[in-house]
Image (cartoon, rainbow over all chains, first blue to last red; front, side, top):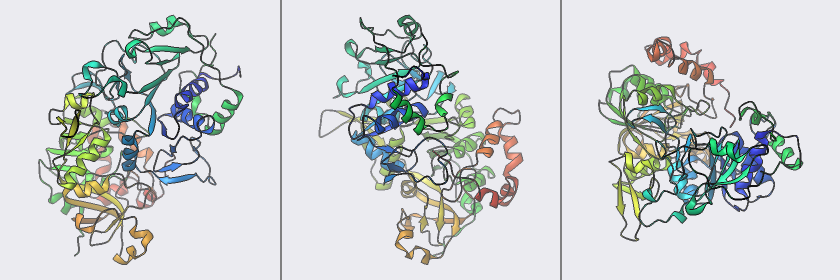
Length: 264
Length: 291
């Protein structure tokens, strides 16, 4: 264990755990921390993961983030244009980690619109993107850099981009067990949907964070086990891999003020 | 057959109220010179189908769009497209918001002449609640319900490619042709701008012919416009113009709004536009993005 690590690095390691035991699936991390998490998992404990270059090729080795210099040759293993991505998505052989703007107690997420009416939203964002298809086709995880009750809301998402454990929206012939939302990593903690009836559950607290802080910043009711462990600190090996995959230290820009990993 | 046309001739064949598909993806290989020619025209009430970038933002801002069929509108490095946001937040456009893959299925259904393609994508989300035109149906083969993604029939598609010959053989040399083959096949008419017009012999070499994704019978018109994707990219020839997109976005916060952008850059022709953005050599030297 290392005592000198940033919160971003702690989150990368906690998020990498989402891909442990995934086997031979395409690991897609959208954003710097999820991408580094998937890369770390592939380069350490989940070597069978697959990865793209975020453009058009499948790689046998993850690309470092940012400018890779003139001499760099990426390790392609196949073409993987956007049309082919959907063939992979719909096969289920993928696990994506993304950062929605809202997440509700069902694990439904919103990437599209906030407030107002659907015809005239107060804040228009990206759109549904591939979230609907991802969520019903393969496992998904979330990364949220600013844990707050504005993200983890009371009530349902303003626009439901991805299916969750909501009995009221369950399609005919489907069961809640068909839905597979794995892990939510935030700047405060790790959560999953392992509580009773898929209730959101606190899995671990980042060093120096208390249960109350998480509860106060979460709009829905969390299942809190009797014993909540502390999120594991990065190992020296993990920190080395992260530095190699992020040579320009983009991870330092991802969480406000780039705090240390241990805030006790 | 010689299918060469000018951009003005392409827009002359489009009519108010048409459903227009636009190829490319976000800020990548968009037929922007053809979009600019629409901006210069009187055309209106369009329904757009697009993996949207500034093509959608500009046409919305110019009041050309009645309805948008989309999964996202984004400039990638700037996740949110400013003029698309304004159009949505002012309630100016109708939308059919769907998943990226559903859009692909809609184009395939149109291309294959079937009314819909069944999929589980969209179930359990607001895609099926906010889109009365998208039906959920029972299957004759199982007890589940399925989304019947309707065919997205296009009156016309606009696409930008690296190279084409006068007969409409089109080559996309970059790493991804996106869904452009399906845009070409889903449309009654497909108009293609190209960075370079080549002789048909160019495609004799298998490695060149391998980069042709639809038959020339699916190409209606060919418009040679070097640099015609600017400010979007035409990888491997040039990257997208980050500085230009930033300047474009700044107009959304400026009092002048989109008209300020039009006044500064659009001009009466593509030659005017290219002069205003620094010329073709500057476009061709834009670096490729690193992802």
